[in-house]
Length: 212
Image (cartoon, rainbow, N blue to C red):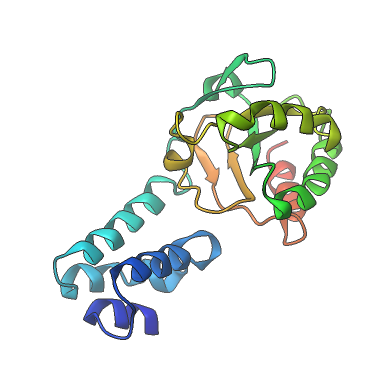
């Protein structure tokens, strides 16, 4: 709440560049609180026009665009054989995504727990677990050969090159690991699922138990 007041009146925060990073941190993932949702009318009514106001409005728009029940942004990505896979290919399945990268140590530490849950539901024909790497295109082979090393070949693995695919922007991915779930109808269930060790397995168990 103190952040909200400071942003509205334009005091108590660093210059615009730092403000941008602070705000993104607050709006990202679990820091996007009910207080921030309820504060939108205050921002709209009292915040002066300018770059910071536009940033706040853009952050709200991104969160609303990815809210549960909205159509998931379409994507077409390649696997390690360079074969293309589109979101539409998973229609009729609950799609559970782990967004990671080979340079992300925290992501790598959590991969075994993601795979443990994937193994648990491997016999569910209406569920698909996949990973999406955001490694650079120059790191394609490094990513490709990391898949067996990290024991990921039990699921489909795709890569979204940051400079040539809009995946990160479309899904507002500012930090990884990130866990996303899309429903059988192609609509978003959640784009900020708790990670392994923080409620991921419980979230998936509850979701899949109610969707049998």
